[in-house]
Length: 228
Image (tube, rainbow, N blue to C red):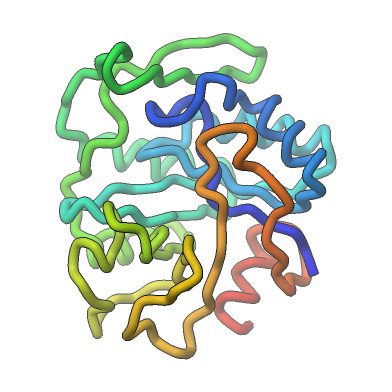
């Protein structure tokens, strides 16, 4: 078993704490005994390179990702096989932005951490919905060789069930993410259930969630989720 946490926000997400820097996240993950983590900021992968560098130094597996908000306001976790694919997918998502300027005093700061520790602020508000439906997003992620699942489907907001009330028959997902103990009805039996912290603060990063992966990386997760 490999201890994982595949849904963590950094200080780039406006709703995350400013202390969620790449170095602090990896330090907390290491102390918690995690072996594989994914950074999934809202609609952007710009802090993934810095976290990847810190994870490599700490000897922790890392997968770059993004939590995308669809036009229906559904949150989906999208994980990419490498930093190059993540950056390309992130740039493509930028073309679907609504163009709303962030107000840090209202929504929170959106701090990009550079490879040498530089700090810049993302100007446009990141957690606004992108102009893409959940089904269109699923097809788009496949074009970047990524994995996708609906995030925290059992939460009362921004989840598949809170928005649509069901699991659509034509929904193509690699897994489903649960946050609480009670599973919503209608989730396909053959799809893997995942649990993640959805960490927005350092103290949210705890003992992780064990998965029977062959390796602590994207390929190991992909083989498990797709039963390859």
